Figure (cartoon, rainbow over the protein chains, first blue to last red):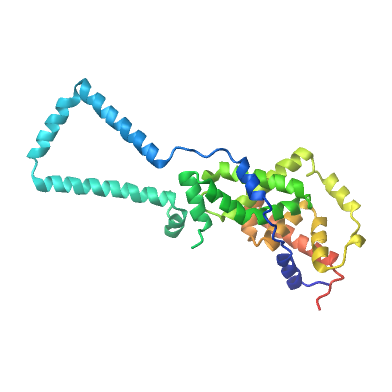
Length: 115
Length: 178
C-alpha cells in the first residue's frame, strides 16, 4: 500500500501549472473601468474649493477678523511663534504617521498594532 | 526587484492600478483555476468561468482585504464561495448527485501512471474531503487557513484531510513504494 510520505509528495507534485492562455486578458477585459481622476486633479479641486471658500468668507465680511489676527500675530514674541509652528508640525506629522501605518499592511503586521 | 503581492495590492488601493491587479491575476491564476478544476471535477470551462468571477469579485472587494491572511488564501475563499454559489444554483451540492456521480465511475478504468491515478482518485473523493485535501495537501495551506477558506471548524478540516488521504491510499493500494 502506498505510504503517507509518497502520497504527500505525489499530491504536491501533481499540482499542474496552468498556462495563462489569455485568461488574465479576459479577466482584465471584464473589470469595471478604472477611476480616471488622478491625485493631482483631486489636489487641484481641493485647493480650488479652499481658495473659493476663503474668498467668499472674506467678501461676506470676515476680512477684518483676518486683518486683526495677522496684526495680533505680528505682536507675538518670536519664540512663541516658533513653539506654535513646531507644535503644529508635530501634530500634522503624527497624523501622517498614523495614516501611513493604517495604509501599509507590512508595517501594521510588523508593529502588531490594531487600528 | 519583483514587487510583492502587498506592493501590488497597495497600488490597486491607492491608484486603482489595473496593471497591478493584472499582475496579481497572472501570479495566482494557475492555483485558483487548479483548485476550481478539482472542485468542478475537471470541467475546464466552468472552472475558468468561476475563476474569472472570483478575480472580478476580488477586484471589486479588494478594500476588504486587510492583509491578515495571505492574498492567495483570501482568493481561495472567494473562489470557493463562487463555486459553492454556482453549485447551489445547479443543485450539485446535494448528496444524491455526489453518490450518483461516484457510482458512475469505474475504478477499473484508471489509466496507468501514479499521477494520473492520483488525479482520478482525487476526483472520486466526496466534495468536502476533496476540497480539504486539495487545499492542504496540494496547495500547501495550513489546516487553519483551509478552515478559514471553507468557513468550517478546524477539527472538521483535519478530519476531512485524514479521511481523504486514507481513501486515496486505499484507492491507490496497488501502488506500493519501490
